Image 1 (tube, one colour):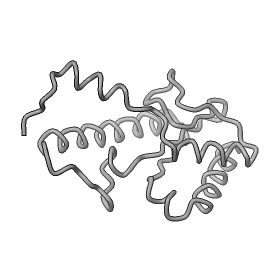
Image 2 (tube, helix red, strand yellow):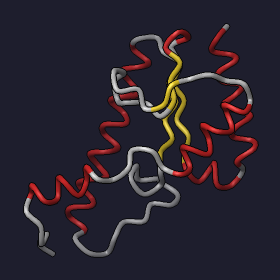
Image 3 (tube, helix red, strand yellow):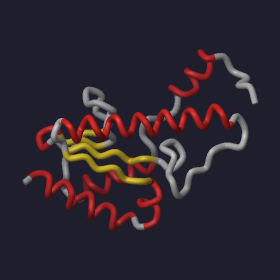
Amino acid sequence: MVDNLTKEQRRKNMQAIRSQSQLENLVSKALWHEGLRFRKNTKDLYGKPDISIKKYKIVIFIDSCFWHGCPIHENKPLTNQGYWNKKIKRNRDRDRKVTQYYVDNNWNILRIWEHDLKDNFENVIKSVNDFIIKSKM
């Protein structure tokens, strides 16, 4: 199926998508409640991590099953599959590149899948808290 929007219109639509999901906000509130202090969506860090603590070289990404192509819950639209296959592949490639950047530069990086948060929010928050505390040492 052909996209019925011009490239410029599609770009504007994609830019209008909020950079912070409700799930990211829930995680942020839970971690803040635990006494952890951090920055959200830090623009000057590569890949604009969802949560970052520069002092301890910690970055955390919360990956949605849809946009990041979760191997368990991937749910691509049935229309315009060529576009979506390329889009999800680009997102996955970018995720690998960003992860490798932080590994190469000795940062502590954690990626969390949306479904893990939905399945067991409290356990994921505890493991993120443990990850941050361990990374500070």
